[in-house]
Image 1 (cartoon, rainbow, N blue to C red):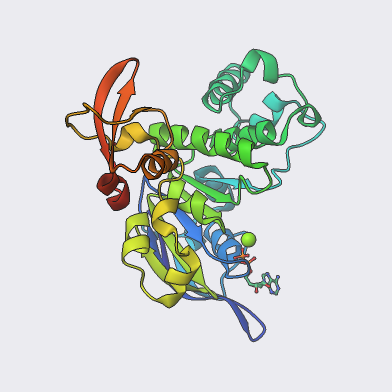
Image 2: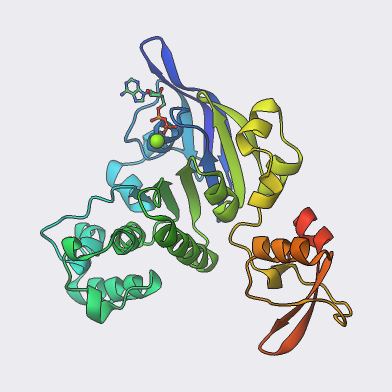
Length: 310
Ligand code: ADP
Ligand code: MG
C-alpha cells in the first residue's frame, strides 16, 4: 500500500502538487487521471523519490520512503515511462536483465527470468531475446519496457503514460495485454494517464486530480454515477457511462433468460457495438451466443448500469 500524506511540491510560489492525501490500495491498479499540468507526473516521481517533496510524506507499506535506501526503493518499485528509454546498444534480453544484473543474480537465473518475462508480455523469447531496440515497433518496445520494470518482481509498479505514444491499435493491444498481466500478478500499480478511456478500462480505482489537488478518488462507477462536483462531471464528459463500456465484451454482461425471438450476437462482440445493434434493431435485449451455444440474454439495462460480472 502506498500512502500520500499532505504531499506537496512547490516551485517558487507555484504549487505543482498541493496537500495531496491519498491511499493506493495494495494489489490494485489506481489510475492517476487529470488534465495536462495537473501534477500527475510530479506526484508519481515523488513516490519513487525522483523528485523530493517540499512538504508531506510518502509511506510505502507503512514506512516513510525517506527511510529506504535508494537501491531498496529501486528494487521495490518498477517504473515505466512513455519513451521507454531502452538502451539502444543492448539486446532486448540485456535490457530486461538490467535490474537483475544490478542485484547480482547469476547468469542462469537472469536468463530464465528474462525468458519468463518476455513470454509474460507476449514476445517470443526465441525471436526477441537477441533483437536490438531499433528493430522493434513502438508497441513491442513498450512491452520490453514493462518486462524490464517487472524484472526484479517489485510489489509496486509506477507507470507514466506508458501507452501514450502508441497508435490506437497498438495501444488497445497493449492495454489488453497489460490487463491480463495485472490480473495474474496483482501488483500495486499507479498508472498516470490523461486518457479517460484508459483510466476506466484499466483502473480498479481512479484518482482524478485538478490543479495539484485531488478532485475525486473512487471506483470508475463512483466517478461516473456519483461525481464529486462539476469539474469531475465536466472532465468525464457527457457520454461517461458509454465510455465505461470501452474494452468490455457482450459476454461480460449476459444474464440468464429466454433468447427466443431476439436478434443474435456473438459474445465476443464489444459492448459498445452491442449497444449499437440494439439501437439499430429497436430492441432492448439481444441473444448472445458463443461457439454456437446460447450464453443468455444481454439487456439494455445491464449495459446502462454497468453491472458486469467477472
Ligand atoms: P502532469 O504530469 O499532470 O501533466 P506535471 O506533474 O508534469 O503535470 O506538472 C505539474 C505542474 O508543475 C505544471 O504546471 C508544471 O509546469 C509544473 N512543473 C513541473 N516541473 C517543474 C519544474 N521543474 N519547475 C517548475 N515547474 C514545474
Ligand atoms: Mg505528466
